[in-house]
Length: 277
Image (tube, rainbow, N blue to C red; front, side, top):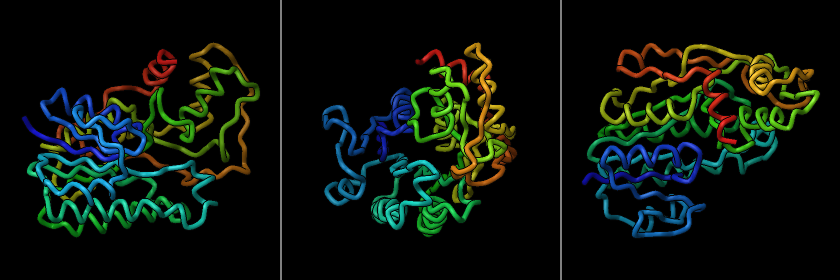
């Protein structure tokens, strides 16, 4: 039996990834303050800094570090110094890994948001790239996810927020910013498959874009969702809301050269999300 540690295991990516690790034969220890503690089932209710302070066993084959606090872009930009609170979590994990390196891989996601320096989250992830990058002897696999989405994602993210308005048949149907900002939407099943693939197939210490290579603007996304439900609202852009970068689309070449390619189209992803509701 191989062993995996997943920080942030109750979050959006974590709760989809843990079952895949278990199906692949890993005994998983999940660490997240939102969990109901159950040691026998490998569920630890703690922050990652609390966990690494109290557990110094170092018995893991794979460590996946997902622990993060990510409010929406508008709140991040206006929340002051608290927006940088993830930096100590990354340092705590890096310090733990330096003493207890995993036998197979440390898998950590940076973000496509590193292109927008007005967003504090960009600086959190850029700092994380430096901190984890300093672990030269650790088999570090760095994923750069683009806009991951799914039906059970928190409403602080654009995809589920717009989808909720669509399900309520709001008219006008609102999107944040200009509505013309472009994102590369990656379904959560594809995203977690990329994490699994990274363990054995991605090169160490090389950020790999995880995306489809296809961009969709928010107005088009909203129209696709409304069409899937069967109504035709006016779509209104809220220019007073922050929108971050104008365009974020992955270059999938590196991932494809390693044998990974997303499979789920945005239209199919919208249908799956609606089926979940």
